[in-house]
Image 1 (tube, rainbow, N blue to C red):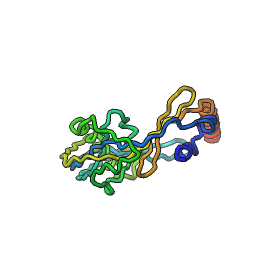
Image 2 (image 1 turned 90 degrees about the vertical axis):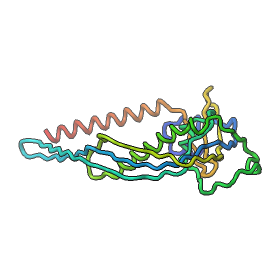
Image 3 (image 1 turned 45 degrees about the horizontal axis):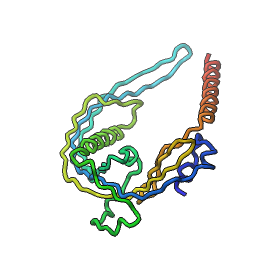
Image 4 (image 1 turned 180 degrees about the vertical axis):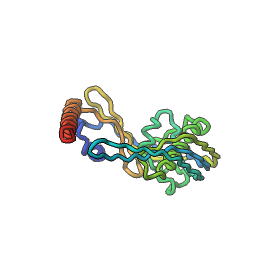
Length: 231
């Protein structure tokens, strides 16, 4: 089952939750989405730092070089989804992306069999700001990832101009799973196309802090050992 696979490898999920949880509700929902197109022209300046360290018998040396890095380019975005239902968490819906827009077909009520269908209650004019924020963030990340070979990079100034294009409307299939444990409701969402599942899981605090303290002790011991060897 998808939820069991989702919990695999999660060390800090209480074992009793894995063993005793049960699904209280599963429902298939067609969630309304607005799909935004946009063209972006961006110019971003960065400060990049490269550090070199060495030592001799008497001293430790650190050489820090700063570089001015510039990126400029145009990016085309197509079908950036923003859910149009106030009943759905935007973060949760974004977490189960991507949706396959290329296989979209014209609306037909026959596709709704076995699913609930939500009508949008957040219109495109309200959703475009979130879309533009996602587009801006993606542009900044893409430009930043193109800068390699430095120890650190930070943005100094940027000019990002967006020209919004077509807006389309689509319904995407989502499975909503609800499970209750220790009087706490846990909700999971699964992409009905890809099967990707996301959701919050309970934390075994004892296991978490036990691991944290062990790691802290190991790191502290390693620091003291290195200090002793280098002294």
